[in-house]
Length: 291
Image 1 (tube, helix red, strand yellow):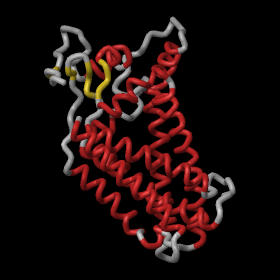
Image 2 (tube, one colour):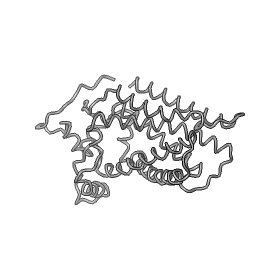
Image 3 (cartoon, one colour):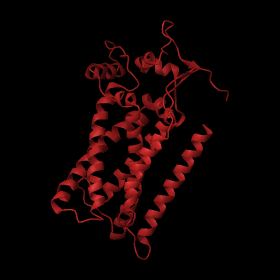
Image 4 (cartoon, one colour):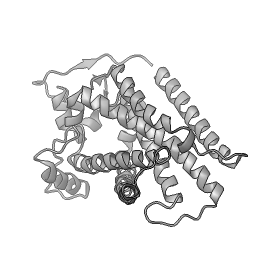
């Protein structure tokens, strides 16, 4: 935990300092637009994400006493870099006039917002490609996000149960709810479109990109960000604001969910790792380290 906190603190400080620098240089003499001078970082970030994934050792889920390891350190890193990058991109995108909303910023404020947008792009690309490479290196991590044949049925039963309909029992959900898996397809598609069109927009700061290409890329970028924004709002609502998501939110800081929570909400997942409490199923456990 101490190592995770240190890495998290260093990453957070570096991100904040980058944001402050990006904002301040927009108001300095000889205003600097980072998309012009630092475009190469946009190419470096994906490379670093893939490289980091290749050097990363992942930890499989395991029961430790009365808790279950759900998210290892790399999972938390890819989640927060992608998530925080997405949040800042959405906020600055709206401020700059994306989503077909006119910008109300002054010229210098536009430059400052673009510089902050740039920092978020670098963080977002690192986190996204870090996740993507991790998923590719372990195909199971990618497949566990994809909907199954029970997607619609389990989604109806899950939310029917939450709404108090007693005719529905909690389905044996796996690591991720079937409703999350359906939403994942939206997130995957919108993220791919955002990256491709975003890279074209960055390229326009370096090369003469044909006008017709930019005429397609810009509105497509905005539409994809709207889709990503809808997914992001739903993710925050169900994962952080509503009480039913709080155990999962805590796990994104600690790595663990309570064993009782896993039994009630993710019985299929526990069965998969052989830890659903049934004596007929081998239980893979480790001794919980002393505090």
